Image (cartoon, rainbow, N blue to C red; front, top):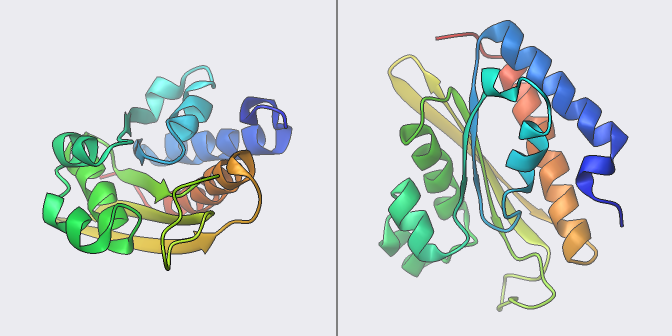
Length: 174
């Protein structure tokens, strides 16, 4: 399977995202677990991305989620790292620990191992957060992607960026 950077349609989507973010004066941040920085790499592969990409967090371990993003360890213990509660905390934490306007967070089980009862390989939680005045809003989405590790990570990147583009299109500068 080709690298995501070789995916012309995906790179066009990132370019579309860049155009919308620049036009609206917005910046994004990412908090990635199962994608290991792929989203940040795609975004920063475009020249001039420093105009709209503020920073990326790769928080693969539970400790990193707590230390870098402020995710409460009790959330991880209670719900597991691959959960709605944790991805929402990751999305909010990325926004809190950056100067960005929008965040995208992902946590999942890309496989081939790691499945637990009720949490199959391919399960991914995606979260997005944004500021609305003095308030922070967030939403999450649960997906179970078919295929191998590369397919799960690729689908996660694509869906995360697609939804981020839709959110950015509806936002305006602070």
